[in-house]
Picture 1 (cartoon, rainbow, N blue to C red):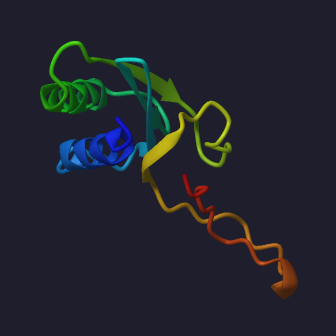
Picture 2 (picture 1 turned 30 degrees about the vertical axis):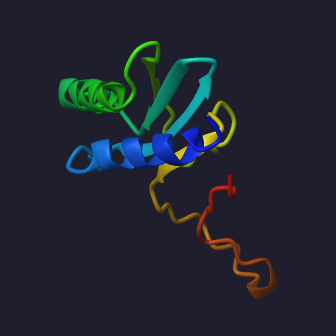
Picture 3 (picture 1 turned 60 degrees about the horizontal axis):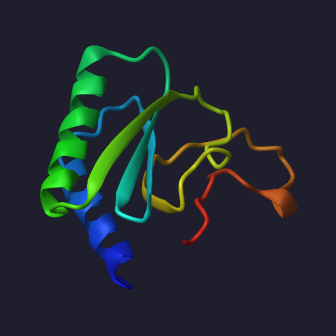
Length: 118
């Protein structure tokens, strides 16, 4: 089971192909025992196509993990520029590039939020 991390990330990233709308800020994932959880974080009002796409992604991931595995999805609204890291699951499958205000201080330039390396 030591390569579940790789298999899960590749599965989620493949399933996301063609399913990323401009409102999707991040997708994190994790597992405990044989239960996989996918967390989709959206910016702004959730639309039906966003929910449908998240369900399709979860179904495609489930197809890569036969029983006894299960796949659950969490949908959250967290508007930009709120920090995505609190509430994130262990693995980052997708993180939208987001520009933050430049403070004007060249020594403390942090104009792009970067996800932690898992």
